[in-house]
Each structure stands twice: as C-alpha cells, then as structure tokens.
Image 1 (cartoon, rainbow, N blue to C red):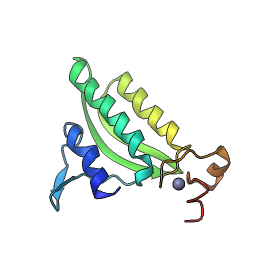
Image 2 (cartoon, protein in one colour):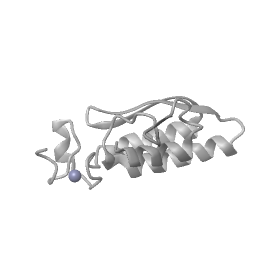
Image 3 (tube, rainbow, N blue to C red):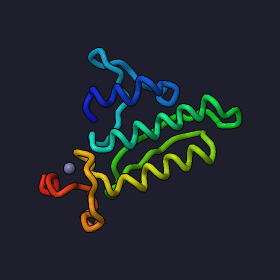
Length: 124
Ligand SMILES: [Zn+2]
C-alpha cells in the first residue's frame, strides 16, 4: 500500500490499529496488499469503526494483519461481533473480482492464476 493510502486507512480508524506508528510524518501500520483494494478496505474499516462506536455489545476490534493470500484479501483481527465478521467476510469475498493493482473489475477467468489482475495488469 502506498504511504498516502496507508495513512488514509489508518488515521481515521486508529481505534482498530493500536500499533500504528508515524513514519516520515505519516501514519503507518503495514497493509500487505496493493492500492487496488483501497476502496474495499476503506469502506470495510469505516463500517467496522462505526460499529465499534455505536454497538455497546461489540467487542473492541484490533486488526492484526491485512494481506493478499491465494489471490484474495485476508483480514485477520480480534474482537468484534457478527456484524464485523460479516463486513470483513464481504470485503474478502469481493476482493477476488477486483484487480489488486488498480481496482478494476476482474473476471472469474483470472482466478485460477491465484492473483486478481485486470487485463492491463495481468502480465505485471
Ligand atoms: Zn489493474
């Protein structure tokens, strides 16, 4: 994840990333995936962050690891409730049809190569 995007994911959701640090003047946590999944992560993290604030029975969420595995987004975390689980599951499932480099929609035919890439980024 580029430093700009990394900060845009961390900074509004610091409750989810207690280990975030400042690197070169920007918030950094360590997302192990490319910028193509930024929107997906941004939306999922916003929903989970809001959930933690408004739902009294929702356990505080700590995100442990975010990476690409077998061509899909993986979000490892602690805490939460069924809602949080559902949001993160949806983000993971949706990621397989989103180019991890640019965010374009990817057809299913790309998946047996284990990396979601659009036609433009398929070779890179
Ligand atoms: Zn692409």
